[in-house]
Image (cartoon, rainbow, N blue to C red; front, side, top):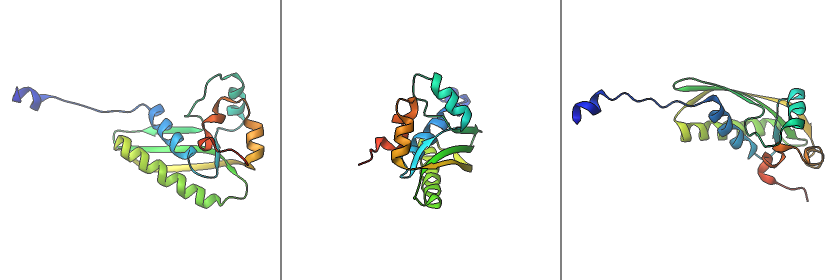
Length: 140
């Protein structure tokens, strides 16, 4: 039995979509992030999508030990975007490391829009990813 275990070769790998999902869920829970989205193309595909896609607005390149991420976000007007970026970076790096053991070596966050939370909620009504963003926070 010992010889078989010594000869056992194992590997744990992750699909890019798994890493994108972890990053998306982590980033959407940062105060000030209204949505992760990919701009105009994302808006068009949202019209035809019937279910939420937590990987929207995120591209990952996953290696054996490292990850590089490109993320696109809409943030809340009036919030400190540098602070949002730092919080997103910390949460995404922490969650990916804790859940997968992979090291994030590059994280680029592109802000493609700023708007008030109220305006975002009005625009997002009925869109599939609207319930994924910002922990379901409501405007008072």
